[in-house]
Image (cartoon, rainbow, N blue to C red; front, side):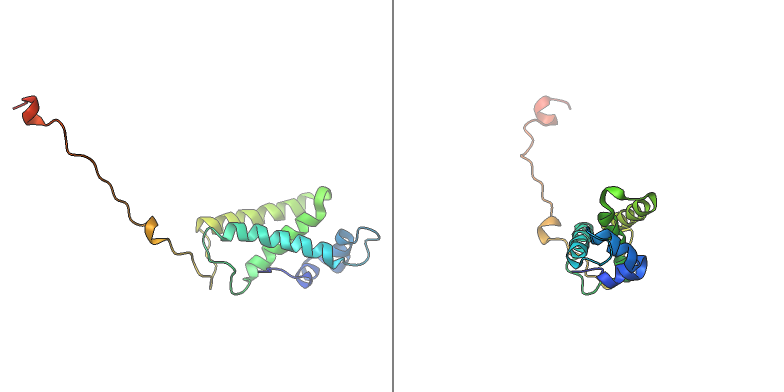
Length: 139
């Protein structure tokens, strides 16, 4: 599932910044291929956290995950030129995803994973005692 689109990044960060991050020659035109790769990487990172709690793909992208995907994609686009502000937004996004994976944050409308039936049953057995009080004469 795609959580954020090119338009989401342009709305949040401006077309000039996105063009500078994706157009590796002149920095003037948004390169859809470069941006698409960053968005796909963000989607994969998000899914890696969501898979711990939810059936994927989600039916729709919640607004909170659009923001998270935009922040992750932007961080990836900055590469080795990342600023403290961009890094902080990325770290906040990852912290939020960790909370989702732990079950502390719930995604409305998402289908939670159901545990497998075999994971629910635990059986234990042991052989009969070899020694007991009578055999040891402890009475």
